[in-house]
Length: 380
Image (cartoon, rainbow, N blue to C red; front, side, top):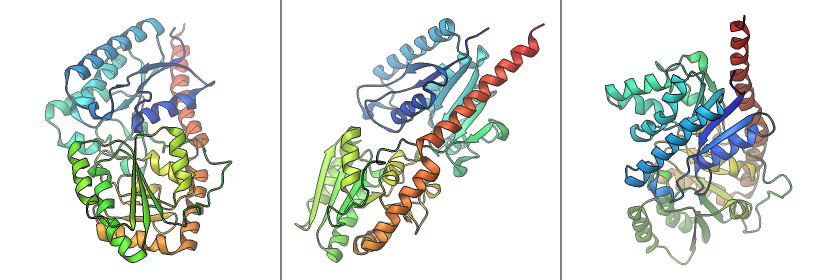
């Protein structure tokens, strides 16, 4: 009989991104509750290498696949947990884990951390669709992040096996004030990978128009540039800024610096249109910090930010709407505080780490219990 252990696949930080954060939080949720075996699939070379086809990535995939097979054979886990990609090349890498787990009759739990999988599956080739169905067919459970993506596995995994578990994060601000008044309500924060699809250029285009109406503002951009083209486009926009606009680009930051920035700013701005977006951790961090948020009606974001309550939602790419909402929050101290308090409360009630951990561990316990029940019925 196999050990009642769970083999989790996923990258640990650094670099810090959504997937490495997700891996950390899954492992943290399992602490002292389950026997976890972790296969670390991190690429320490940086974010720019993720999803690319090159010799380095091919070598990493081969090494990770070999380690996975060794762990299957020696540790004999009962459940295998795999976060799955939303594009053909990364998904083929995931098959290195999914197919051996299926063929060795492990219980497989897959976790979709984005909102693009359904589109990817519908638009890919017939051969790739067959590979997806084969790799995921028979999965014990498929986790999605919200109602918006509940049908991502349609025609692949039965609806009864699809579970909604929104992201959750630990409370880093429970012992600190969240009034955000040190900068007089004039500091904006953008915290994510710096790429056009995440809205960094939209925010830069909006800032001069906002400054014309409200005067001096300060904006902090925290994160790593994804492409040289986006960086050059940003530099071109910055050349037209007047003295009333202060910008700071911090580069990649760690957890301590992130916490400081969230405490020191007044409004969190995230006008994303990133195709693979799901349930962004950065929004949960801003909510935990008690910040009002301006974001987009994209992926599961409307399930996190309630328009007019803890922030404003705009259409992706609508720079005019972004300017208007920034103007409203920058000029209304009472509304800014009210929305910040609503963000904090919404986080505590729906997206605290303890809620996430409870839901995830209940799912793992169910998977383990079903295996134990099967063994009992098969024992003479």
